[in-house]
Image (cartoon, rainbow, N blue to C red):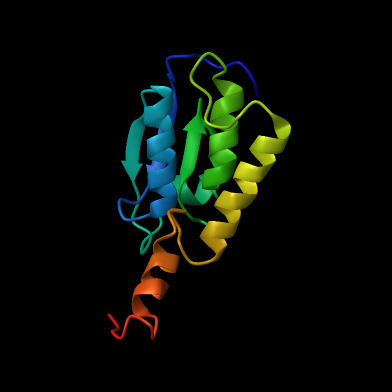
Length: 135
């Protein structure tokens, strides 16, 4: 799927405003300078488009490029780098650095911080007995 239009024509992002995973994709699209249409989804009453685009999980984000779905935020980031090579890269060119970056992002999301920003670890430090207070 390499080599798409560099202007991002045909990109539709199925997302929910409060989703940090969808926010990751919105930030990536902005970093790459790609125009896209945003289609807000209601996860309580999943619409036909979301069910067709992600039939297994029915979750966001889903990026539609020329009508073809790419699901899961990290898969979307990799797809954007491969499909739009003429835009600034999101991941490093070096395979080791790229793999390290993926494991860091995956590890931080599985640890409870969906945005990968380390907010969970910071909250734990603030609640530690040494500090003498809890949130």
